[in-house]
Amino acid sequence: MNARPTILCPIDFSDACRDALGYARLIAEHFHGRLILLAVEDPLLMEAVQLAKGAAWNPEDTRDELARYAARALDGNPLSGVDVQFEVTVGKPARQILHVAHEEAADLIVMSTHGLTGARKLFFGSTTERVLRETTVPVLATPPSGRLPLTFDDIGRAVGRIVIPVDLWSSSQPHVLMGAKIAAFLKVPLVVTHVVEPVRSPLAARLHLPSIELERRTRAEDALRGLLDNLPAGVHSDALVAYGDPAEEIAKITRDRQAGLIVIGLHASPMLGARMGSVTYRVLCLSSGLVLGVPPELKSSGSREFSSLPAVASS
Image 1 (cartoon, helix red, strand yellow):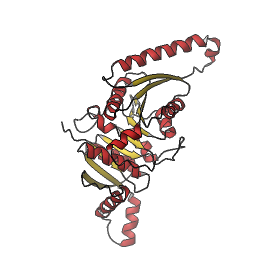
Image 2: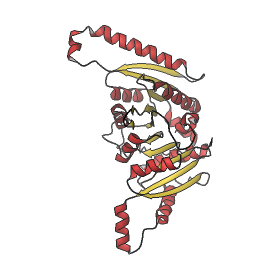
Image 3: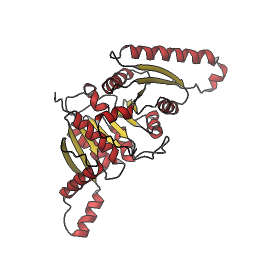
Image 4: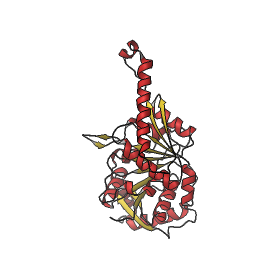
């Protein structure tokens, strides 16, 4: 097994990518990994360039532009200490990002949300959304905060606390263990939370709901305690059961606990494979911090497992 992680960071040359590049660089540098900076060119634009200049587009021009962008974005914090690779492809951005991630056996994709800043974003970038819907590689979505991390310790300070929402399905245990490894590495506490949704049905009006809701909360609390019992020693953790709309409650808990990272699962469909669920989508829209989306089954064309690289996930 190759112990050097490969980090893929798509770049569209916007200001929003600056933070994503900063996190990707620090992860690759700290773990002596490989950093791939990827630019995806629009085929229509390439055709327009060829018609205007009367010459074929040269991908080396885009590679040079990638290097210049990285130098500017990192504020003089060069990539000299990182095994960096500049890749240029032509096509649909999301499709090309996923293709390169597969071909290069990427362990992590770090990309900007391209969303609005603040506690509530109406949308995030369509490319990021499509990558999250299709990925079999964990994706770290970074908001354009304008606070570029300069050292790896800055990441721990920025995170502060980790929130791990769980649905108490079979996939919950691996996600909690991954979050615990990240928390242990960064020396930050974590909160494992489950949101009990209100029962909404015509039948509910005829039932004695207080006892039912109490039973649901009690079962959720017991299940959360069971998840925490299996955490590594030394990880400070809390279990929290909330009641209401899942995405709204997760966002509120994240704000109230001043957590800088949410580790959330990307649900699977037997027919369609890894797909981002509606709750995950809304959490991404509502979150103002880092969000790590974890596929139901971590797959890579290499033999590495993301869970064996907790430091990579901790960005």
